[in-house]
Length: 221
Image 1 (cartoon, rainbow, N blue to C red):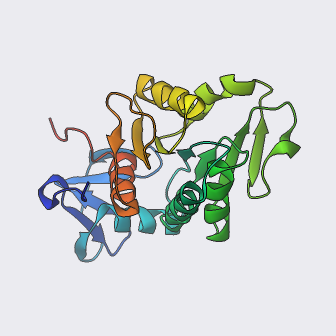
Image 2 (cartoon, rainbow, N blue to C red; image 1 turned 45 degrees about the horizontal axis):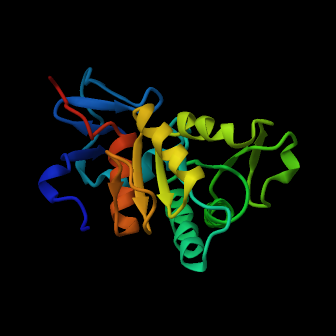
């Protein structure tokens, strides 16, 4: 699958005063919402892509740190781990907070990628103690819930990306759809109705940026 068609990506402007603009509205990065533009904008403004806008908002410390998730098998193969690590790194470079199940396999690889790029990593641990988290989890949260913690992973994330996986990943994807999250899949992850299969990291980051910036829904109606 290729990247989104240019016509499907809204036109955005970034002002010299650090305000993201769209069609007479500005983005409130703390509320993650578009609001009416009140008053003039400082300086000139120039076009930016959703990923560029997200990176700048996070770099200026304006964004609320709502996490995005990477999910997948704890017994991952090398291809899955390589992709998960690259995804984690890409999310961190956008300034996004990464949330995983906190253990091995895809979860550890994604955390390692984000951690190595200076990102914040959260792990929702199935065990009763935090110290079972992989070494790349910055904020380990022990639940003592076992597999039932999958519902928390899905509920807590703004978007989820599944890299491969079987029953555990399937449950997180299904919970994500139930909670109206953006759910993306890669490397033959389980098929769930409504989940978007992506072929490249660029498409994933583009779709996640659109989601976080509230550009994947009707505007101005």
